[in-house]
Amino acid sequence: MVDLSTGYKEVSVRHENDKSKLSFWYFKDEELLAVDTINNTKAYVFGTKFIKIDKVKLVDASLVLKTIAS
Image (tube, rainbow, N blue to C red; front, side, top):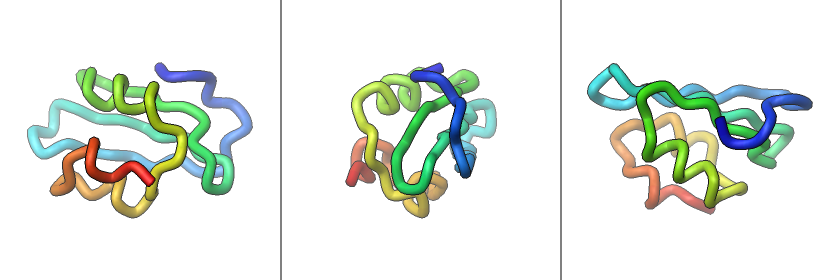
C-alpha cells in the first residue's frame, strides 16, 4: 500500500494483461491519495513517485505505467 486510502471519492482499478496483477488507485477529485496492489511491485513503486495521474489512461493496460504520469 502506498499512503492511506481514507477520504477518497473514487477508486480506479487497473488489471494488468497477465491477470495475476491488480492495483487499486484511490482519488479525491483529481488528487491521488493511495495505491493498493496485488502482485504488482511496479505499480507500487510507480504510486510512490507520482501523485497526479490521468485516471482514464491509468486503467488502460495497453499503456505502460511510466508513460502516463500527468
